Image 1 (cartoon, rainbow, N blue to C red):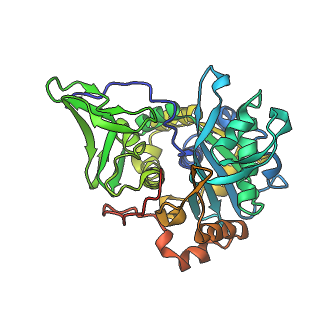
Image 2: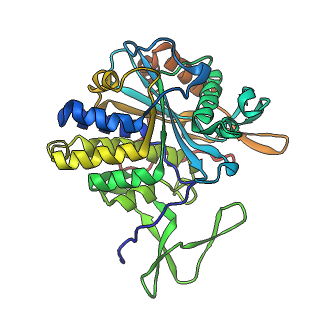
Length: 388
């Protein structure tokens, strides 16, 4: 196989891998480098504001912590094109500060988006990924987009408040994974890449599929063989891992966005496990490289809590303490309104959100173990697809 060439990934392919990146910063900053690294890299990633009326009161994270994690599709140097949130994760850390529970909100979830006078948005019902755009437009920028999205998710979750939030930049993440030297991952369903393939005659890399006007892959291009990820565990190069977790169209179980969400969450754990391995955290040069890439990838909104306090509070979380959860049990729950297809949260997903707010998520998950995402290299159950 020809060597993978470096290239700029499409802007829509943002991954919500922020919490993993924050934990990378925490593990590395505490173990190797102390305050010098903390001050240097902390200034690169921390921001004020960004949570609007959904911000938790008081500059403290002594109790339970809830974070909003967002991957965005941003048109660089073209603000008129706006930005939408491709990936939305709510991460909850119980008051014991020894675990983190993560659930994804499907980007097509039908919600009420509050009005935003500053960006001339009058409010209305739309897909949740539009909230970031309506806060971003007319000069709102990232801060405005994040604030309106946070307020929208807060209303969806019955008034949930956030102690912090983060936005990921995909191009920066590519460098972070390279700095780690790749990751060890388990593929749970055969996945065919629509972005990466190889010419069977020349072995030159290229896009393997033709696409229709909606961006959906149709037929294979002549003489092209797509990259295929088989079920099983192995070491992934950086380009392989990032290509794998971008896929949603040709998954063996036809689980679309839900499959992609699960694979992204699994990647977070794999990345954190690699970052906290002895070969990484005991190497000051590698740690410095890794932290430099985190600064390029992540914008962290700290809600007036110092980065040092965040690090001290979350330093006890390790990969085994990360629990990834399947929204709607990983099944499509589509509804059609005025001819437009939306997703909606089933009762279990709504109850899960409430348990995040009440800090009772551990008890809830114990009663619903089927909601825990599969991390093993075994095929996941096939969801029922009700729409894209």
